[in-house]
Amino acid sequence: MTESPTGRPRHEFQTDDATLAPIAAKVMAGERLSAEDGYALYRSPDILAVGWLANLVRERMHGNLTFFNVNRHINPTNVCVASCRLCAFGKKKGDSGTYTMALEEAWQSAGEGYSEAVTEFHIVGGLHPDLPFEYFLDLVKGLKERFPKVHIKAFTMVEVAFLAKRAKLSIPDALIQMKAAGVDSCPGGGAEIFADRVRHIICDHKIDGSEWLETAEMVHNAGLRSNATMLYGHIENEEDRVDHMLKLRAVQDRTGGFQTFIPLAFHPENTVLGHLPRTTGFDDMRQIAVGRLLLDNFAHVKSYWQMVTPKMAQISLRFGADDIDGTVVEEKIYHEAGATTPQGMRRAELERLIREAGREPVERDTLYNRVTRTEDTFVIAV
Ligand code: V47
Image 1 (spheres, rainbow, N blue to C red):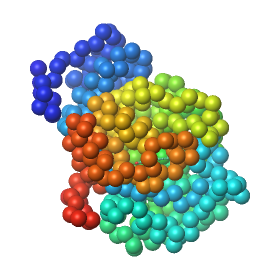
Image 2 (cartoon, protein in one colour):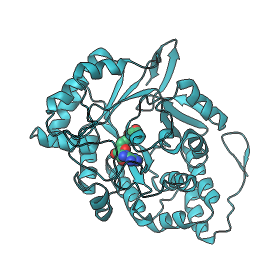
Image 3 (cartoon, rainbow, N blue to C red):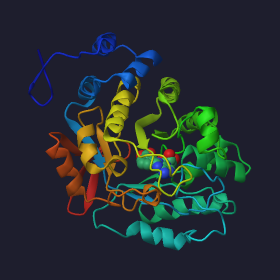
Image 4 (tube, rainbow, N blue to C red):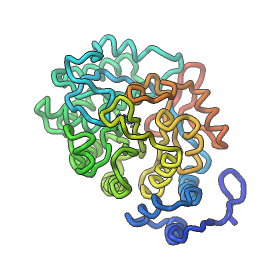
């Protein structure tokens, strides 16, 4: 019997689902899982055994540590040409309820909110038909001038490709300008589900799955790290989910540029797909676990508390997740789609959630360096 990082003895793997035995043997030996293994993990009725295996991998990689950060979301505009059926946030130019922040307004709102010094601005917005590339460069430059210590994680692969096209630049050339302006890394959104059949229905007006993956590769080759998301719980099936994760794994084998895998539970309210039910806790935990098991070359799996609720985020720390994201302030995309979680959380509350789950909280910056705080400032140990 081995010992877990919590100091308690770790019991042997047990299941009454025979299909899991060969998968468990591979996991214990540190071998890569196949697509068929992924299907078996989705189909197994023994969710606790699936979670046990994911937890084994999670503890092997991170012991008892659980990461969170102090961040702020900035969504500069909700005007979007894409009309994705999955989305309740983006609106067509001229529709009621649209907004576009003036630069001064964006810079000012970045400094508002909690007094805790944020270490990250997370910037994601709509695909605006008229805003020039310079608006986004100036937005980032202005933030860097005002908040030089804050890491700027800006623009999904969809936005990077869209902005480059609008500026008539190649993606690598656009990335050079974004980096010069102050972009430090990219968020993982817009990946949805890569399979064309699904993408045609949920988001047919933006880059396809191959283009998303190629853009991510260019981002990594430009020296920027990025995250990768997967939107689940709509019209996709298990094969689509496995296909999505294995495509991410293949890019990661080449670049090593992804930091974190973030499964995003679909919120149907106020979307064209509003008739679909929400994901269940069972599905959310299984998705975290399967992600942890298939994505052996990803250092982190994030259970985004805004998406799965703080309570399920706690449970996920035993199902493969090692990160619950951050203070967020102030989330818009899921709240437009019916999320009932708070739009932000204090640092101390995040720490409490993690401690109560029996894990050790570690404040990280965007690149997973440890953050140490003194009063209202912070030091990053690189
Ligand atoms: O790409 C949109 C998703 C994403 C809905 O990198 C929806 O650390 C559920 O990228 N229901 C944007 N999801 C958010 C994003 C993100 C979030 C947190 C952390 C990170 C990171 C990135 O939100 C979109 C889309 O996949 N989304 N609408 C909806 N109705």
